[in-house]
Image (cartoon, rainbow, N blue to C red; front, side, top):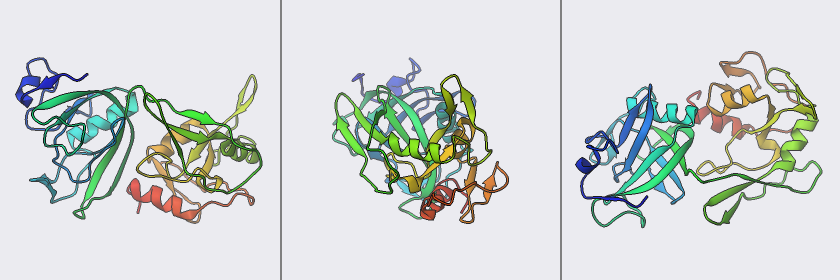
Length: 275
């Protein structure tokens, strides 16, 4: 980490970054080996241990002129890296607007994991593919909160240490799982283990940056691991009347005591191309 390259061509002989003309070195079959932050996309955001990265396509001279597509090789590569847990080398260039960027040339920033992908309308009004990458040493630490069912919306804690960590209020997740007796709201499955039943609390609008969803019971679902992964990756969505869309059929089971903020479902549908 910290290795300096004068030009992008210097990265090619060692296969550090094999594509001279593209910021993404990768494809849907192999995943992405490396990306370069070069200031080419106005929607990018660099927080150091966390990067919000705009995918490839539809850009000319730093401005978006057409929609991006998930089938574009670079974008498909980042999706594969996310699905398979493959780390990505990140390189910052001198044209990238960040205090961490070099004054000249390019500097290796380390290994990052792709942890989220979604689509949104960019500053120029065109659809863009977005990715969230976190430094490979990042961990998520649970924070135990007070018991009892409550709908308060506490801001997500960000603790400064070696890396940036997001503390999630796991007690509210436990409340939702107990309310549904650990049965998935999509398929009704309750997974039996030696210590009881298992389910997962799934945020509808992600808590992490840049989505900044509330860690509240009105933003949580009780899902089995399969449907949790499918929901997070946009393989299905939920309409305002709880009808399941995409690769799931039927209606979401909703307990009368569980109020869900429908704006969160709308946000999820928009970011995954259902609206």
